[in-house]
Image (cartoon, rainbow over all chains, first blue to last red; front, side, top):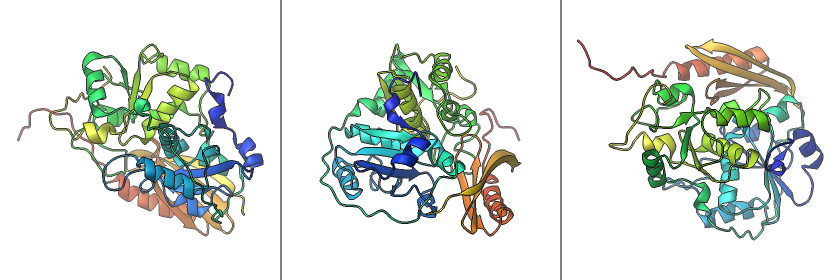
Length: 283
Length: 80
């Protein structure tokens, strides 16, 4: 992990295997496949559901401060707890949870490098037992929306190029050939990308085993697309979870200070009446 | 508590899309998961008494989902 701007936000599987039962530490699993936790999880880990607990289930939004506090309290997490997040799909929704925990000001939150995939591939223990949790009285801070981009900011960035727009979806989604990842329901009216956005698929930041690439590899990957930290960056995907993964890479591994995740992403932009859309190859 | 064993990954093409199959054994059960390779989204998770059974179920479900994926043609004038 040498060379990352904030190496303390990552833990390795061998470290976690030795520490998952430590007092003052809580492991939380967040998967795309919300039933994977029941199949078996890291012993003592809580499971969070991205589509019921890490969002507002009525309006399209992240959970309110009160709902977030309730989730943390029910998960036995105090303000000074070290939280280790992991999940499937190379930590898509673990990064989503990390982003939310930073919006609400949790100081010590980390991601398991390689996520669920690496833990299983290495044959490490899984449990189906639910952890016994003692409710806390958690107090969230913020929200800090400097790390969250809303539609007007993205529209402004498209117009005046004040921020680099990074589309982290697959090349076929970016060009407009398909409207959602293969096999998933189409959730937008139009395909393509925000004019001026560069395509850097989220997965290009990962190794085959699910771990993050080295700092040098990541720098090279993003700098050729004009992302070097000299101006703000806004990352987006389809619903905001893949772009939270890229947000994590840019902000915490590369140390770019001004990075925001546009969680409205393509399901907002691609459904807007009259929104400009670019199709085809990168600009 | 159990330790997963016999972890295996392989890629194949299904309905014109590259798919990754991941399987492993946990106790007496084999688990299989199918993802599209790009962008890496989850398609199916299945179980079986053997790896072949779990993979076969995952492939069937993934095939159903992938066959519904529509490729959008470039916009342009229509001709009859």
